[in-house]
Image (cartoon, rainbow, N blue to C red):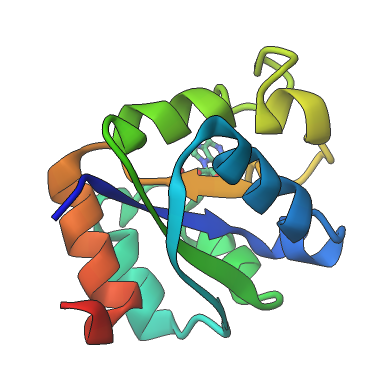
Length: 140
Ligand code: CMP
């Protein structure tokens, strides 16, 4: 299979009506959408997805935020898509994210405990495989 990554349009992005704009940027870059599904994340799914952040001060608010509304889960495909989408997304903190990136153009600091930064993107091909199996068990 071609290289794949898991993208999540987080509840802030869905709420603000930015799902289409974010999908547009992924497609405009030349990546292929392999799966797109609106999901209500459960605590179990988020605990598995964010296992590496368990114990951090922002963990509980992060899980709460991720359950505050539906998440648009996306599998995007293409050579270099894992680092390529992280580059499209920009820095984790939207205040620092460069203009031209999703977070830099569309995000800001809302003064909340968790950085509401519109999107998640897998940080390595191994994370992508693990996360895609969690969000899209049917994809294999
Ligand atoms: P994400 O790529 O989904 O991975 C973990 C998330 O936690 C991250 O995006 C942010 O939404 C949030 N996050 C990461 N670091 C911090 C931090 N220092 N303070 C608050 N939220 C954070």
